[in-house]
Length: 66
Image (cartoon, rainbow, N blue to C red; front, top):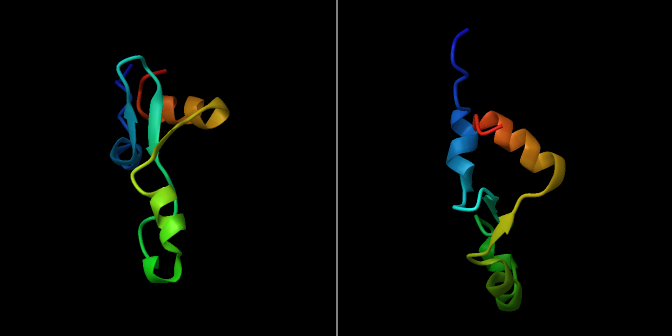
């Protein structure tokens, strides 16, 4: 049986930590920054989120880590 290929879009967006958790980038900090308040931009900047539940299971499968 052939090997399963890693989903290239997923590997660009999600990283696996040393303990095996999946981290994703937070939303809302890519564009349209001038309409957002400074307080809002500070909150959403540079924060990675831990994926949980079904989303993490799906991503793990796409990464070939299942």
